[in-house]
Length: 241
Image 1 (cartoon, rainbow, N blue to C red):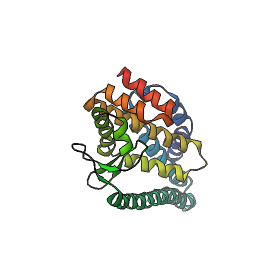
Image 2: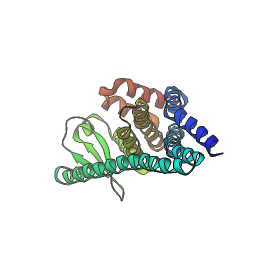
Image 3: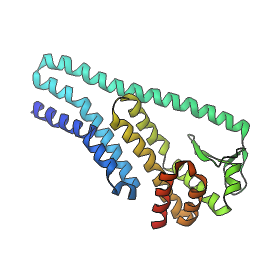
Image 4: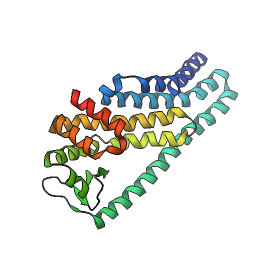
């Protein structure tokens, strides 16, 4: 029974490691349902990881005591490898976050009411959020205020607040760790890129429910020329919403 379970789980691990992510990344429906798609990506990562760790244990059990003496260390080593990369990613992300917040305390000022954001002197239109245990710091630039009207700025801030409320930073961190753990696997890169793309769409959806699609679409069109293809896709999606 253990041998059959090991074979099944090995097949699941292989499918979730290569063909499933490739097919999923090329499908059209995930872009229309970003939140559901993010759940699917998490399932792919979690189930694939658990299957990979479980296979040597089940194979060892099927072989007997000698098999377990090999299977247990292999399973522990795989789990430890993934866990260490996750821990390293968390430590590095936390160090960057603390440095960034310290710099913002020195270089930013409160943005005009009622934005509840921090303002930095920068000609380039910028907007992002820095997560904290209690809420997040929304940062916008003077260049953003110069290029957008009041409603468009509110749409951008709503988008960034959506990232904070849905804790997209935690999700991105997990897939960043997966990518670091498997640098030679294109699937890890594809998964990380797709999740980064989907969190933007998920934040768009939440923001447009608050401020409306037209203001958000205009804001994206005006501040993101460097990513013309992707932003065009987002604008068209908002226009069709």
